[in-house]
Image 1 (cartoon, rainbow, N blue to C red):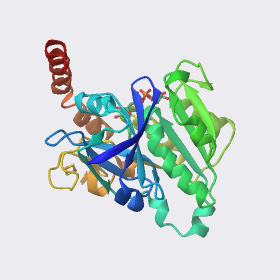
Image 2 (image 1 turned 135 degrees about the horizontal axis):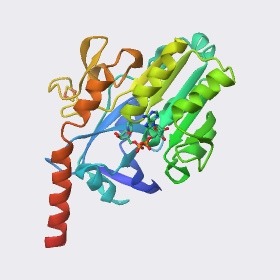
Image 3 (image 1 turned 45 degrees about the horizontal axis):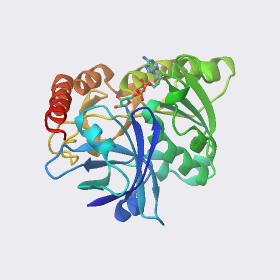
Image 4 (image 1 turned 45 degrees about the vertical axis):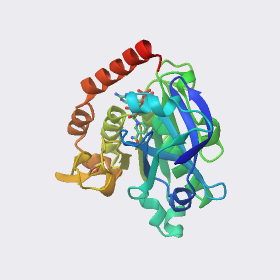
Length: 287
Ligand code: NAD
Ligand code: FES
């Protein structure tokens, strides 16, 4: 069992939790994820790691209430327990293996969208700790939905975009990326983009004409997280790969996003029915 030692609300339906998981905290690296189960026999939920503290033995996760299982996670309070917290899983970000001299010559642009801002944070923090300054675009629907802006400002040069213009640049992250590169003439060696699939698809289309290497982190549906079940398969450069063991990070210009988007929405109806049944049960039996 894994104790929730801290919980805070970041925005509407988005919660941050610090979990006591000493072994995971000791082994975690930027880019990796965990698979969480609220109760024995419950659904396995892959969640990207938003931070880890080796001394405190805690791992931070950020969850948005999307389906029934994420609602169950978000309903837990400080002092409650998760049944399973498996990880760290997946390959760490490529840059953690680069020689420091080469890394320090790199100019990175990170593009974070919505809840995808949380997994961007440990990457930018790790780079800062290793002497690399990064530009970071954080996009959200409006100023109330922006998360991790204070934390990120301590480790990177933050540029905000909101769809409604309530903070920063008025428009999508793709528009702000164009502003930085095409209007301000900023040069980058690599872009790392994490957020909704549709955002990653359009961001990779934006960076393609710039010949800018663009890494994306895919949040495919997962079951076992070991490369055995095939649930998380994606097509990358014409090859079938498994997000849980070959990713979650891939060359964004090689990912078949249309297929990935189709696969991600495959169980939307079942997910909606599960939420409706749960709400009905809660009303009838006061669960
Ligand atoms: P959102 O819908 O508010 O989008 C965030 C930003 O993405 C927007 O502000 C906009 O700038 C950009 N964007 C959206 N559509 C775009 C488009 N068509 N073209 C260009 N830019 C676009 O984000 P949200 O509601 O927080 O998203 C939640 C989604 O993110 C969920 O589906 C969740 O599964 C996913 N997610 C992904 C990861 C990951 O590892 N890739 C991690 C956490 C969450
Ligand atoms: Fe089963 Fe990746 S989750 S193969």
